[in-house]
Image 1 (cartoon, rainbow, N blue to C red):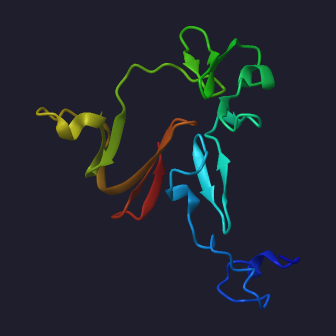
Image 2 (image 1 turned 120 degrees about the vertical axis):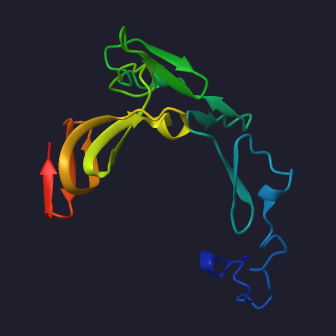
Image 3 (image 1 turned 135 degrees about the vertical axis):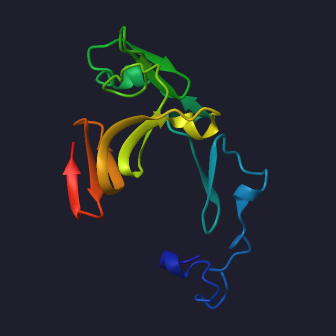
Length: 175
C-alpha cells in the first residue's frame, strides 16, 4: 500500500484503484474474537487492534502481559511522608490512627457512621439515616424549622454549611 491519508483506509471507497486501501480486515473487530492476545483491554482499530491495561498495570513488552506497577517505587510522593504499600493494581497509604489505609491522598478519616440524607418538607429541613426509606420506624431530626416553602437545599461538606431556598418568600438562605 502506498502512502495515503489514514482517513482513506477502510472508508469503503477504492481510493488506490486496486482496492489495496480496503483490505478484508476492514470492519473486523478482532477484540470480539478470542484470537487477540490482550491480557486486560482490547481496543479495536480500523485494521487490527492494540492492547491496554487497567489502571495500576503496564504492558510487559516481552510477554505482552499486564504487570502490576509498583506505585510506591515509581512515585515516592504518592503518600508524601507516610508509608506506602503496593497492592495488586493500586497502592495504599498508611494514614495512621484514627485514619485508615487509603489509596486516596490526602488520607481520609475513617467514618463509622451511616450516611445521612437531608431533605426539605416545605415547613422544615430534616436529616435521617440514608436507609430511612427501608426502615420500619422512620426517625428524622429537624435541623431548621418554621419555613413557608423550603423546597431545595444543598450542603457544602468542605465548609460545613447548608443552603436552601424558600419559594414562598423567594429567598435563598445559608445556615
